[in-house]
Picture 1: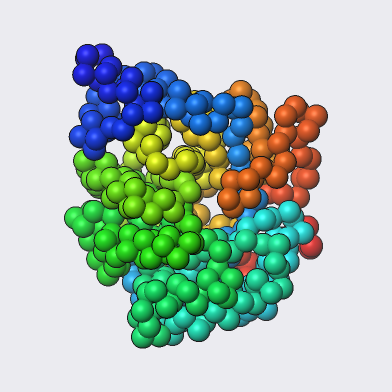
Picture 2: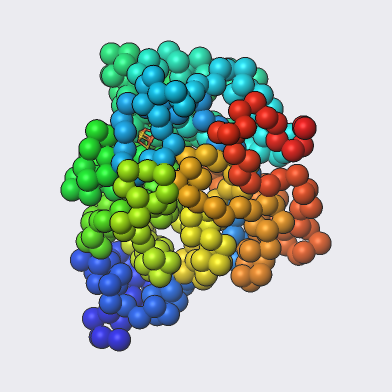
Length: 388
Ligand code: SF4
């Protein structure tokens, strides 16, 4: 290992800031184990008890109708397409009820950019969910949905965000970030708003006191430098607002879309990115890895490369699953993944507060009904196992 890389790793492990150029050097040149060790050192300092968190939530899709036609997306259908659908509020509430019965603390309401859905639609949707299920935190939609609804309703972003927050939206999902730099973003989502606009929405929300997460989809042909540029854009905004709770990178899934499998991120690239993210984001507390797209083995290794959260069991997920993500989990598996990686599992809420720390195996939850990935796309109206 060069003296330069060793010095950068040491500074980052000690909590010092590294530049984008230094992050790129670590990403491309640092020895794998040294990179992981430095990232894990930072994780240990932030979370000395060795706790790794997980969440129980349900992703509920209200419509797959979308005018934006992202090339990587296998979920959407164009308006008037025979396979387009929209669920009414009663169906959304029924799914919320099932989620509550399975111990969910959060719902992620996600959908396409429906040409008719303005702010009023989301006010009604979030209002119905929050008044019927006040125990569920609505961590939902993303900046591109906010931009779309504001345009449909002809209101400012500031007004759109205030109104949906008043209706019940508590936290904005980091969805739709994909790649924020212009070149790779235009290549995979030419009709989507720019990365700068994505950040603008997040900035407005943060300044209104609404927190969010930040994501990154890697593996669609972007360069290593563009991956670091994406993270730099997020870090710069975080310096101003402090509103991002976590960073969640995941890998592009190549099935059933227009982009297909021309490029994909390898597991090694993913793990290196995870470690660099822990070292680079000295201003974002939590780092989540995606077992959904990279699998449970990579998820366990990531726990030794800086990750402190494995995200959700996801009682339902259709968007990434439509593009080929095949990994499934359940409460027992997720807790086992954490414990057998020599960490202490804990169920958390949206704000990363610990709801239940499983200090010993005797404390592990045993509810076998809590499993992931019941697809509702081909089973519209069917119920989760608990209620069938
Ligand atoms: S990713 Fe979102 S905005 Fe893009 S086509 Fe799919 S549903 Fe529409």
